[in-house]
Length: 231
Image (cartoon, rainbow, N blue to C red; front, side, top):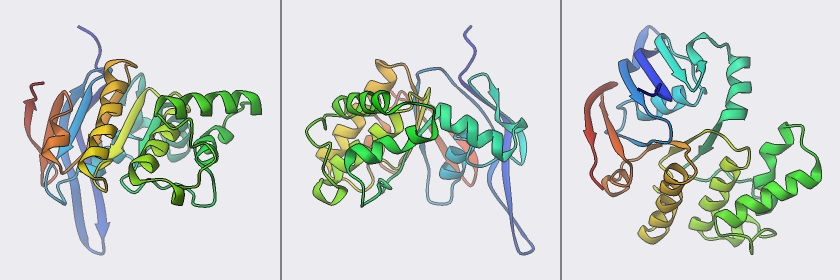
C-alpha cells in the first residue's frame, strides 16, 4: 500500500482569546493520497480554513501529528515551515490577492524572486504557466484590466510557477460566476488528474465539492463524514 501524501493523527489547533480557549480543529485523523483532489466542506466556523492553513504550513498544530510528503510539519518551527512552504505549496485565495500595480507576468513572477533563478529561466517559467491557464495573451495586463475569472487564473499560475507538489485553495470559486467557476474547477481537476499534484480545496459550494474525488466534512472542528464522491 502506498504511503499517504497527507497523514494527520489526532490533529488539534488551539487559540486563546483572553481567558477563552478556542479549538477550531479537534483531534482530526485522516489521510490523503498523492495526487488526490480533496474538498473540505462545513458551515462557517467549522474549522475548514484552519485545517487548510495547517496542511499548508501557515499554522502549526497544537497537538497531534501532521505529515505532508516526507515532512513532519508538527516538528518544524516557523522559519522551517516558511522555507518548506515556499518549495512545496501553491496557495490560491478567494479574492486573488494580486498586486494591482504589477502586470499578470509580474504577479506570477513574484514567488520566483525568492529562489535562485536567473531572469531568462524566470521568464520561461512564467510564460509557460500563463499559457497553461490560457492567458498567454494577457502577460502585460494589469489586474483591473482582467475579468474575475482571468484574475483567478493568474493566481493559479502564480501558485504553479514554483512547481509545488501540493495546491491548497481557499474558496477559489466563491467570487466567480458559474461559468468562470467551472473553468477554475477544470484547471484544478487537471492539476490532480494529469499533473499528479495533490489538491486540497475549501468550499461552501456543493457543486464545486462534487468536482473533487472526495469530500471531508467538518462541523465544530471535527470530521463528521468521509463520503466518497462519485464522478
